[in-house]
Length: 208
Image (cartoon, rainbow, N blue to C red):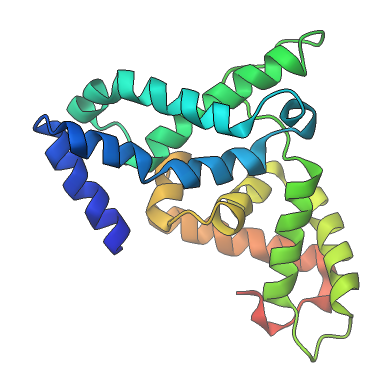
């Protein structure tokens, strides 16, 4: 457990005892993480109409209203719970502004990853995989990485987004996906292996 996680747990215990300052700090310390997630997930057409900071603020207001119930039940670790509220709000906004004239989408179904975020993921994975001994230039590997990611199964791509773009911990990803930490490790290795196969032998030894 990291110091950040330990501090969150201490704040949760204080908040459960009725400490209003702890409740406020608990929400504020995760504000930037929420904003980063929303930036990564928000469709650029939606971003032209809705300020990501407003989505964060509305999520935190909802969290304040539901915090007492959360503290009684603790259905998820704190940040995955807070993130879930933000994701539900994003899905509703996407449906209302982008898909208003299209078929309805189930509430739990996230909107597609924006192209800019997909490229950011490709860049990060290329940086991890590339080395001076690679047969391809970094720019070419990034291009091929972007194409390979587009051909990955959705569940593999989402797992890589959670780990490498949102930079969530293993325990957080396991809680979000409803799996064990061991299952996450297995899926992560398999996702990277499928990505390697799609790339051919262009991936250098630094991919793990």
